[in-house]
Image 1 (cartoon, rainbow, N blue to C red):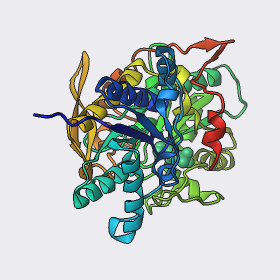
Image 2 (cartoon, protein in one colour):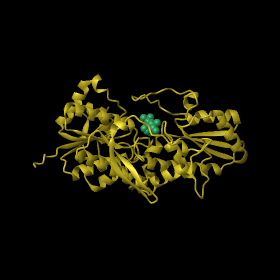
Image 3 (tube, rainbow, N blue to C red):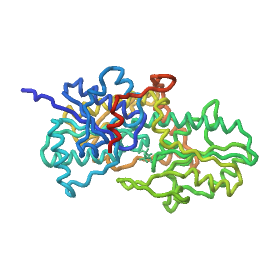
Image 4 (cartoon, rainbow, N blue to C red):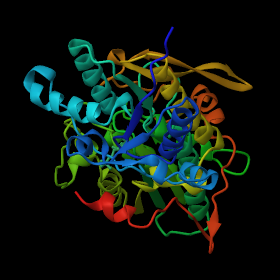
Length: 422
Ligand code: F6P
């Protein structure tokens, strides 16, 4: 049988960045080259940039083994990201024709998209269009999100490193609080990302160990948040402790569905997928605590830090991110389309996981939440099962390449300027 010559690959990154997303990019690149593809293009700012004809040739960026190692240790999306929702095919056929024309002009065989649930919507729509029109281009999703909320996978690359940062930083905040004396006590409220899923907030339990009691309370967005019960809990804790540390998800909401952050005065920003920007929850709660209890209250928002902290990355996470990039490329090379790579945990102790591919239609736009039984009855902490789940994902370290005492990232002269052009 005559072999059809392999042409090119294009890869993009989409949604919120992580500390491991570039390791997946390195994995896609390595496997594409090993499997005999001629060129690997990178979309600048995801599919949104592709539509504008913006892409790079990755071989000009990954020119050595050191570049590949630096890329794996570089946080944020090296190719630039987007939160762009493709219209339904019937709404704008011309747009799909335009995208496919760009892909054909670049002689693309495989399109790999590294992203979360919203980004998988792009893989779903493009693979549907390819099917409708008989195009041979294969579209495969590579999972990533610190939120860990993708359906059908045990976990997502990016989560382990963010969880490790959260556990580490919460522990440091607890230690800091122990060293101070505050006349009326101090409550520190730490706000953690994750939208409507509490995987990241639950990871604050990692602070707990022989040398640290861990946070005093943990509130996930899966359950309704009762502001009065929270104030009472803090009042009681302050009777025996001078410093109280509480971790809350940015997405906690009251029983009527209102985000706690909306109880304050926040300007509203909504993205293309209809997600409100969640910020200010800790500040709102601190204002309530100071006025109700008269104590000192400090709000800490981990914000961008928790997804950019590559200096505190988990080795398991960085290695798995690389592996999943390779698995997505392999799947596309072997003919899969409209699929996403998932992790199946085959053993927890010792930890082992394998990759499989699943239908992206069952994953896109869905949210996998923390099971109710992994939260305590009163809703103010996570159970030992949660801890056993997250523990293996944060193991091992990745030493940054230090230059002048600061971690070095992959850098190519002129590239940042190109990326910034919008
Ligand atoms: O998608 C992951 C995430 O980190 C969420 O946890 C968070 O709500 C959101 O991104 C923030 O995104 P942005 O940086 O676009 O405001």
